[in-house]
Each structure stands twice: as C-alpha cells, then as structure tokens.
Image 1: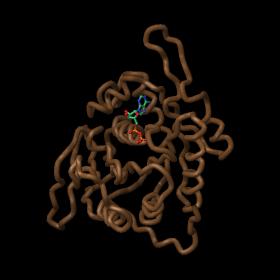
Image 2: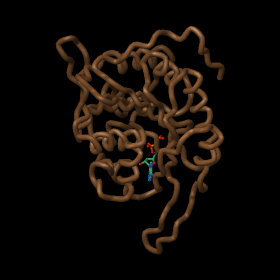
Image 3: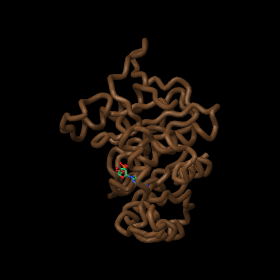
Length: 262
Ligand code: ADP
C-alpha cells in the first residue's frame, strides 16, 4: 500500500484525553482485542489514580462489548456527545454499542469513515489519562485515518510468533513509522502453551518469532503472553483475566506489559 506522508491533515486531540495508546495487529485473531482490554485494566490496576478509557474502532468486528460485558445504547450528554459505558472502572465506547450485535455490517467506505468520525469526535470521555484504542487488524483506511486524525502517544503491536502473523505485524510497524506514530513495541501473544496435566511446554505457533522481528525492526518486545485456557474463558465470559484473576501468572504478564507502555 502506498501511504501518503506529506501533507498530513492536522491532528486534533480528543477533548479531555491526555494520551492515546493504540493496540494494533497485522492479522485478525492474534489476540489484539484481548490485549487491548487487559492492557486497559492493567493500566488502571497499576495506578488507581489514573482514569482509563477503551475505544473500539474495530468497526467490522467490535469485540469490546462482549469482552467487557457491556451492551446498550450510550446516552447523550447535554452537548449531544455520547457518554461511554462503564465497567470494571474503564470507560468504554464501541461501534458494537451503536448497532445490533446481529446486524450485518454492510457499511463500506464512507459509512465506516463517518462511524470512525463519531467514535473519535462525538464521545464525552470526561478526563482520561490514557485512552486505549483497539484498532481493526491490518493497515487499511481506518488505521490510517485514526493515525492522521488524533495525536497518538504510541502503538503496541500484537502478534503471535507465527511467520504469517509476523509478516503482517512488520507491515503494521512500517505503517506507523510512516505516519510518525512511535511504536512502543511488540507483544508476543500465544507464545507458549503449558499442558496443565504434565506441565510440558509447547510452542504451538513457533518460538521467539516476535523477538526476531523486534531485532530486525529495532523494536522492543514488551512482553510475552502464554496461550492459556483461562485467558480465552475470561474474555468469552466478559470477565477479563486482569480483572477476574489478577493474581494469576497470565494476568501478571499483562500487568508487566502495562508498566512497559507508560
Ligand atoms: P483479535 O482482536 O486479534 O482478532 P482476539 O483478542 O479477539 O483477537 O482473540 C481471538 C481469540 O483468541 C479470542 O477467542 C480470545 O479469547 C483468544 N485469545 C487471545 N489471546 C489468547 C491467549 N493468550 N490465550 C488463549 N486465548 C487467547
């Protein structure tokens, strides 16, 4: 994809939001949303004085409502802005709140862009220290327009150690560099599976792929998250692991990553 870097439109901050951290991935299904949710919760858990928001701009496949156990229509403020929905201390906004869960997403082009515009500009966040943004996978128009519309403190790129995921993560990192968004580092998700019975460790998607890519791109690895049943179950039941099992090793992996990000 050719990316225009000259003549970038002027970025305007989101009102009340100090720092924006985007969570991106090259490919779908690598655990980007799971990371975004647990990162938001970990930022809040590590420093209770900080106000954290979570914005889901994965317009074609919003998963924040389910993962954060939220549904419903956002109320409008007096100035006609949408109020985020709140759970586990995190202010959340998602395309999933604005359309029926079962409604086929038939928007294309302009409609998606107007949805993005709403999510970026028509939300009353109050005061936030960090807004974690769950991007769609890949390097398309949505990622580009988010990067060009708001100032972003940094991007976290999630990948499994699998070659095909890493190739796309590489493209993602390049895109952010081209639009002058600092890449904070890579999260290597599903890095290892440990059999709960025999304790044997298997690198189902390969070992250390993200470390190799990080070296190639001169980036940091922010941390490894194991492939673990509890992470999947916690997400599916709307009780993210950092909230529901904060003492677990899996939650601690996210809590450590959160300290690397800020
Ligand atoms: P993406 O946002 O990249 O499409 P998701 O975060 O939706 O990916 O994750 C895809 C699926 O994999 C979800 O069912 C999620 O619960 C599961 N998952 C993500 N990370 C892990 C992990 N480390 N261990 C187990 N399951 C995971």
